[in-house]
Amino acid sequence: MLLATLCFALMSVAVKFASQRYGTGEVVFYRGLIGMLAMATLLRAQGGSWRTPVPGMHVWRSASGVTALSMWFIAIGGLPLATAITLNYMSSVWMALFLIGGAVLMGGRRVDGRLVACVLLGFGGVALILQPTLAREQLGHGLIGLASGLLSALAYLQVTALGRAGEPEARVVFYFSMGSVLVGLGLTLLGPLLGLGGGWTRTHTPFGLACLLAVGGFATLAQWLMTRAYASGSTLVNASLHYLGIVYAAVFGSLFFGDVLNATALAGMALVVVAGLGATLLRSRAAPDAAADPAEA
Image (cartoon, rainbow, N blue to C red; front, side, top):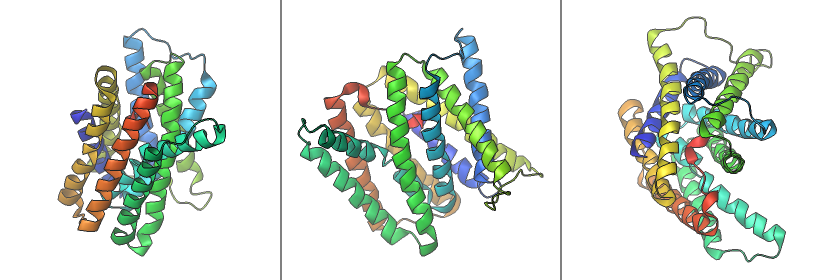
């Protein structure tokens, strides 16, 4: 888990560098292409099959996950690195909100006040992060980063459903990566036609190609490490260690991009971490199988 969070932070650094040279669609495309080739190789080595009995579930998982990924990459390009990662990590708090909503709609279950407290605490942390640390022109990126966490929560729930349906991790990641290729290709080709920018970069530099390779390589390695960690370790311990990604991002953001986070922003990040850990603990006690892998988005 320690290595997985480090790899995800390094992937985020590569995304931020790559976003200075490539459009979001291109970054998503190459990230998916590398992941798809790696998972196809792994499936072949394991003697597994690409065929799935639940294609519709993979489509829904890929749609929500790739959209969340694209929005997160946009946020990384326009925000301090640690801020973008923290907003994406709000997914645990969003999942707690989903549980509360489900309990209210079902009518027969009492809403756990501790979950409500976690949700309020998490949104309080977001308010501290967004208000003092984002310039006016960064607010849009902040809202996009927040929305990426919401969509990530939906993707995690779908990953849990796929696991219960017996789908192997490599096949889940393979189809998600395929979805990334298709969406990235669409964004890159249609962006200029729709006036959204983008298009293929005609002149590559060694550094630019290295950034794209790092995005796909670190993301794929991190997913594999994270899957191994959740398969063999405690869900709560893994969830706790997962938040070290924020610390890594703060260090890398300061070293590579000169990011400065004031005391109020750091307090907001701490609230998000506490809220996320509390929500994970309560969810794992209520439904152990529902503790999703944050890396699967």
